[in-house]
Length: 176
Image (tube, rainbow, N blue to C red; front, side, top):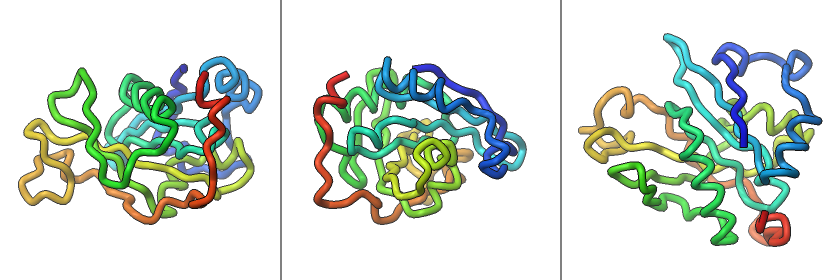
């Protein structure tokens, strides 16, 4: 699971200007189960990281805003595949290297703006995304009036997860 680092401004570009390789992504998904794409921030944009490859297993892609730590999404992808199910909306998930649990949310359509390489790779925007939210240094999440900056400024893209209720995960692919 390698990380591709892009700039925040590149996230706004058109698909025709995409600078990532479908062949490289396919190879990484085949070998590891997913690929991570990290986008660096700037003064007007948070950095973020997301997965490509969970869609092939019938589980949501993951997106973390204001985080480019690959261990977070790698650990969560591994956990989700072991469980053979997406995280519950609002679920708190313990990670050994964080003092407080991270939180998973089903996302609205705005998540596609962040995960544009998933859309480019699969050729559609009907994939599901779950947002992973990292708490502030006191364990408070955006939306809590006492949440500290910059955590309190992270957009929460909460909405109805867009995967079909009758979709069954492909367990053979999950067990990579």
